[in-house]
Image (cartoon, rainbow, N blue to C red):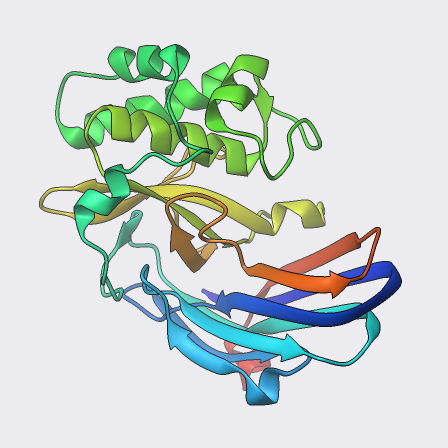
Length: 271
């Protein structure tokens, strides 16, 4: 499936910022089932940006803006050819040892409730456990936009019983790690088939299955990723896989606006 993606992020400040540095994980990888045909990242300072691969295999652009400013716009997008590989992600750069993905983070630290969920999913092969975990997480948490924020932990979202895709992924990851299964966070894009643009920027999880490798699980939609997904970046949690992270001097009272569009293209449109 040919998918076009346009991702625009705009930061605005009430007072002037004097300096800003941003790390941009906005370049999707090509691997089995995902081929990036064209892609471009535009941001202040991108022409002089350092480009490197981080410890999780993500492509990173490090940009700096040293002029006074009260607005930054960062754009990324292109065309990606995808195939349904039933959630199995092979052919990726994998510099990180598996044991690292058993590590707890503040957003994925388990509490007794998460341990209880993991205990309910034991038994059978690893794939069976993970599918049960995916369904259990979805049953325990109601999808509600605005019910959580970027710093909400898996335990907090589960206790509240409400969350969004980030929270589902964090709870799934925490539960998988409790069972001794390496798991990681993935953010990317999703062709939802609905008119709601908030569905386009998405997050899910991957877990390690011996004999298969990394397998994706999306508790939000109760499926393993298909050709409707574009994988962007991965990490231990949402913070380490964030598309944009940075620091600045000045620039008080920040407002953030994110617009993501994902559309299916025909071969004729691509030509």
